[in-house]
Image (cartoon, rainbow, N blue to C red):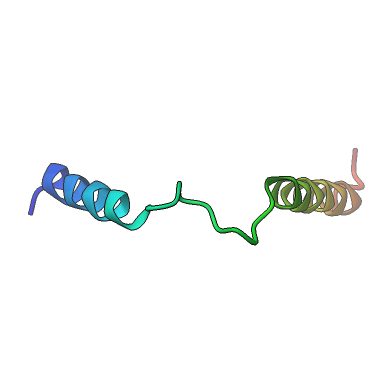
Length: 54
């Protein structure tokens, strides 16, 4: 199988599975975005705590 045919079949399978726009009713975009922002800020804070030599 070539990379192109594999990618084409994956796109076809993904398109068939998304009947309602691809999002779940219980997922909130603001909640997901806020969680991602919190995780990135936490990772930044942890990184700066371990980088004491600057």
